[in-house]
Length: 383
Image (cartoon, rainbow, N blue to C red; front, side, top):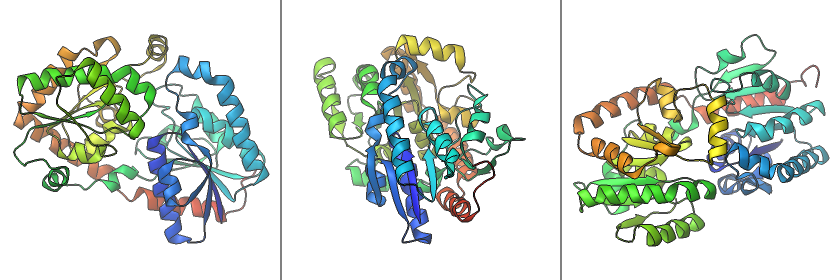
């Protein structure tokens, strides 16, 4: 069995790698190829395109890169048409991959998509686009299938893969021991983004916020988890430039470990907020994009929150600071409110634990079973 697969960012790389491993447990001889990141490659996927080629954030930034992205999408489509898989699965990045799926499905290739587009937040009309593009939609949140009711589309809730990877009761002591942190130390984690574009827009404010908090408590350990060596070098350069007095410890690639070990965290919006929920880590969410992209988002987005953790909860679990509100003095005050109120932190952890239990249902295995069933079925009518 040959499976084409496409992911376009680090979170998708992680989800796709888990799916590959789950399918391989059932079909050891399965072959995977497509647009992959390092985790997918480690799981056994042949990388024909790199996820770095899709590392663009923001409406205006995408428009600037549109000619290149359009050529890339054409190359991806042609690659799969020249060497068709038994089934193709796109992971997230809907604005890029839905067109790929549509063209492959029109050519008779069975298609699936893992992670519903956020039709509940903006552009609800995309439900019909999804129904044209894929035979199977795998949703990671329980409220999503209802948005596709009445469409000629098989839609299944599989659970959130990250909820299976995080233990329901994080072993904080073990994580601290692995990171060389004493049990009684106070720890602040910084996660300023996984893309360089995010780092350029957010890192300085994150560092200045941490410096304010550490100035109030010089014993506070501030730990940051860059995604890779490039991000590490950038963050260290920003620290030296803007906050040379900040005692900052870098633990590259250890974002989950830091969230499980920390007393509080300052994080960017995105998958990291779900990880913070699953780690039961009291957090503050901050995000900045170009002003043009922000104004467009204000016109289009219909949810009251930017953090996925808050959307899941239906209320503000983590305080949010967006764009102009992303001021170090305000964010430092919000972090100190977490660090100075143990009862509030305990209440948050109880809420996060209940949400975690709802989302934890063997997502990768359920997605693998659904994909293998699709691969074995006759091609859908109209393909």
